[in-house]
Every structure is written in C-alpha cells, then in structure tokens.
Length: 232
Image 1 (cartoon, rainbow, N blue to C red):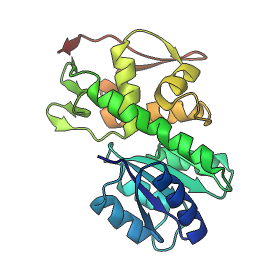
Image 2: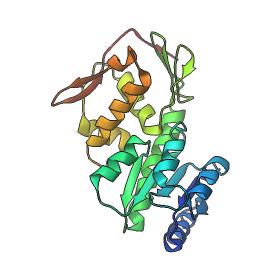
Image 3: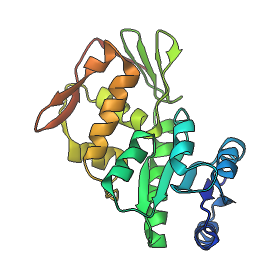
C-alpha cells in the first residue's frame, strides 16, 4: 500500500510543488486549501503524514494539530513563515512531530518526511513485546499505552520516546542522544523538543507514573526501574 501524504496550504504554488515532488517519489497525495478542508481530509483520507501550513483560512495548522493530538499514527509537519522559536515550541506542544520554515528546499521536506516514515514500520513491526509497570501497560506492536485498562493518548514521538526509555530503564540518555534516536540525525530542532515531550508525557501519565521519568540535571533523562515486566 502506498504511503499517503496530505498537503494543506492556501498557497497553490506550494501545494502544487509539494504534490508534484511527492507523487514523483511514489506517494499517494491529497491537497487542501484551507484548514477545514484539511481537517476533513485528515479524518477521511487518513494520511500517514500531514504537512500543514500554520496560517490557513478557517482553521489554523495549530488547531488541526490540537484536534488530531490523540491520533499517534499520523505524523504531522508544520509549515511556518516565521523563524521564531516560540511558534515552533507551540507546534511541538500541540503534538507536531516536526516543523519547516518557509521558504524551504523541497529536498529538506522529503528528508523530513522520510525520517518520520522510517520509524513507523520499524517501531510497529519490530517486536510484539508488551511492557507492564504496575498498572501501566505499553503494547509496542499495537502502539498502545493504557493505565488500569484506560487508554492513554500519546502522539507518535511521545510513544517512541517513552518506549525507548522503558526498554533501557536506568540508562541515562542525554538530550542529544534522545533527539538523535527518536527524531533522527537529520532533525534540526533543538534539544528543547525533548524537554517538551518529557513534560507532556508526565502530564499524560499522571501520578505516580510521572515519577518514572527522571531528570538528571545537566545530563538528561532516564526511566527509574519499578518492577518492569517484559512479555513476549
């Protein structure tokens, strides 16, 4: 099955350029010219990757990102005309996996998309392991997290980050290592991205599981070992 890409921007020159480039690479592409259309395409087309302009009529890329935050199977890349770290941080906090500043080189967009896609099949098909920590269950194959049987909505990168730390409990990872292993060497975002995702994971896991994610100030992060059971 072909990988599906959604491109949403009110500038036809951008959607035409990206659509042509991705179709040439063999992807199945749909486009949207405003936020409402993009949101409907997210639900109906169910893309693997959505490239969303931040400033669109009817609904912004931020709003779509926030609405789709519970769908961890869709990678989201935001396009922004502002090279402002605040705008980028907001996007990441709302669940975006990456961001690209306009104007951009089409090769950069292709690389960013491929970077996210590389992790999807490897993460989902590599193992059928399930990790249990007290009432917390992490199903690696199904890419599901639950506490006392209640589903915990995590984004793509939140799940990947949590799984990596759980699999290597008690090992301390620097922010740079986590950025490399979860986002990839070609990701040019700063280490602040890691801090944001750790904070969001703590909020979503809640007490007492937020205490699993330990900060080693000036170094990085680790998961504290609390009766972690690995079930094949």
